[in-house]
Image (tube, rainbow, N blue to C red; front, side, top):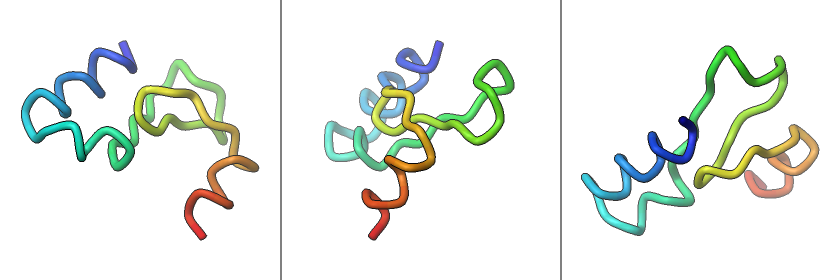
Length: 50
């Protein structure tokens, strides 16, 4: 599902949106989210944001 949401955004807005697309769902444990369709740990997100 996460990959499909990301792909829908990329299809609508272009490939440049892939690494800017964050998807959060209730099925992923608290404190986790995705970037570009890939599940990221909070420790991995902080360096990406800096």
